[in-house]
Image (cartoon, rainbow, N blue to C red; front, side, top):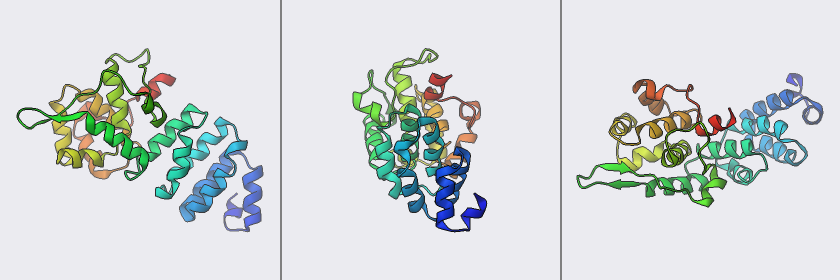
Length: 232
């Protein structure tokens, strides 16, 4: 594969068709770094003929060089037959605040925010989720391991898929101030766990720094998300 990366297109094509999954992932990631559109076209042309276990790591390689040009494919993958691929597509779309998916999620999140009599922002998740949320990556029914109730379950997932830039804009606060704001919320745990999961994809340095000041509630990369708990 490495020889092909600097060799002919025919060599690369043969390696893509005949190589192992690991070799194709390496080729795709390398190509994404130099010609994201070409790599995306190569992947899209092969998706129908591959099984879910083969497709998943290849789809995950789209994270390299991710941009708005990838939105049409990722939006299409929200309806993929594989649950894991649907979830990965939703998470990658959350890294694109201008994507239609992010706009939908931010609209739903905005509807959960309101100001109290003192002008302080509070969040109030709904009793039930909407059926349309499922396509965008929200699982409506809590799993057997969840102990926080349905509202907490829905909120954590919604926060996980919300671009973190939404919070600073909607609340008019810095990331550190948003974290401090969450300390006073009845939904502190759901908010913070959602941010922890979001920051595994949305690598925003200022937000990561803010999260790491909040102690055990925001230990990055250690806390399973609702969807991860479902798989365990």
